[in-house]
Amino acid sequence: MIEASAPGKLVISGEYAVLTGAPALVAAVDRRVTCALRTRAAGGWRFASTGFDANRTISKTEVFVAPPTTIPGIVRRSIAEPDAPDHVEVHIDSASCYRDGVKLGIGSSAATVTALATAFGVMTGGAPRLTDLYDLHADFQGGGSGLDVAAAVTGGVIRFEDRVATPVRLPGGIHLAFVFTGAGSRTTTLLAAFDAWRQRGATGPLERLAAAAREVVDSTTHPRAFLDALGEYTDLLERFDQSTRIGIFGPGHRRARELSSRLGVVYKPCGAGGGDTGVAVSTDIDEINEFKEGVEALGLVVLDMNISYRGVQARTG
Image (cartoon, rainbow, N blue to C red; front, side, top):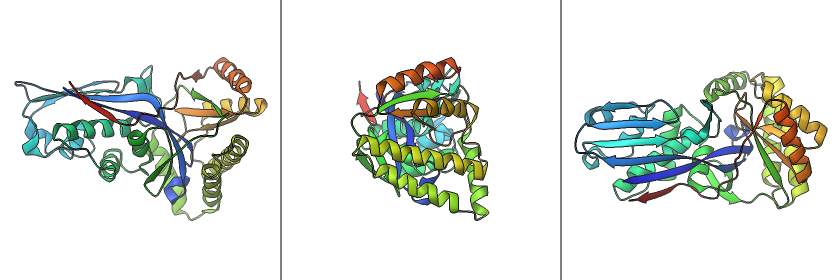
């Protein structure tokens, strides 16, 4: 058996701005996707999953003509057909990236691509290049900056800029809480709205957001400066959302943000927004604990989740 796993991610700052070349601050989280490969004596290729519905059995020939937007399509680009077994079971477990059947929005597709390609790389005695993983995931999901793939590969916290991931550390004394709104969102829909707005040429709000994103990643050495920069970035992200009408601050995020403002905590959606997961940040642990209690009273979910310093990992056995 070959098994590989990769972490999910959350964007601390830089969403949307990263698509213009601005830096993003991204944290890998300890909700992992695991891919296990087991060769079989017969029966073709069996794809099984825990988390999302992808159970099917197909022939090896069908695997190697599959489109890139499918799990078999990732396989055919991860291993050469002559090197692939005739019969194998591929099991993908992404259950930790869901709650009650709803995606948390923590980069499970990038973690899936990274774990799957890594497992097949082990099968052939190699490992996929990061640039190849960027392309695999872009084809699978229909675009994206690659920041979620970079976080899945490296783990920890990274500064992501122009497809380059640089490890950084959040300042000491920073406390985080991760909140799930209970509602999923479609990243592709939100990005399509962003692209449509951008084509109209009103770039001022985006330029201000990009400048604020750079200020956040340049402030990671001091907790107070970091919190102030993140607060300013979040204010500009909200104004950007109002200008573009993308819907980044969905109802759950708005409720959490209103509470955080009263408590002196910075709260923001992570990534494309809409629903999914957000992060609250403070230098005061009592404020964070009060926020957690308050946000659950509002019907939102505080996730038992932390930054993961383990990137993609593989083992045989």
